[in-house]
Length: 249
Image 1 (cartoon, rainbow, N blue to C red):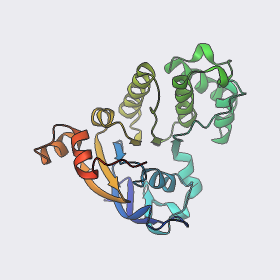
Image 2: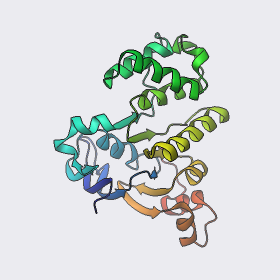
Image 3: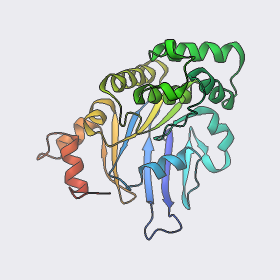
Image 4: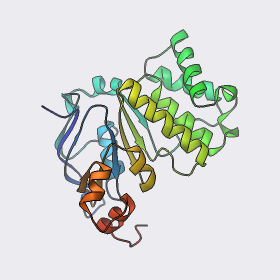
């Protein structure tokens, strides 16, 4: 049976680049999985996520999402996915409510239902009391939480998260991870997540793949993967063993 997200031979090369950003990548992600796509800078994580989210097109390969070919079902697939980019995709001069109303409208939500969803989500993330404040007054952690809510309003079946907890305080990080775990458990939302934070990924993900130079170099459940490398005590040890210790600036 086909995986919920089924990727075969995915390839992408940027015009000015010498090497492929993603190089004949094969990957299967099951429904209701919390899947971590981990790798150093420039490994191909964001390019892969961008292709799956319809933000850029691949040069070769196939992607099927919920058994629908991505290339011919872009509008259908757009309705069942939520995207939370690494960069804060919000308008600083608008209030939190105005930002979320804008993104809700983009997903086809309106009226009382949208208002209720905004209130529900901002309450869940501890931001209801700030709903009428401008984004420019928010801390980094608060902006991250609003950024996440914008991708959740329409109750997507699949949520793509690109470095969702980068650069924020421990409390905000904890709130985000706990809510995502509840969402996965209660709604069976499939989560595809990229991160540099190995300890967080080891705790959060049900399955991980390490990508480097556009190729998958290791894959499996975190605990099982650690057992496969007897000299490694944790996911970070495996990551450094496979990708090296040299800087990737």
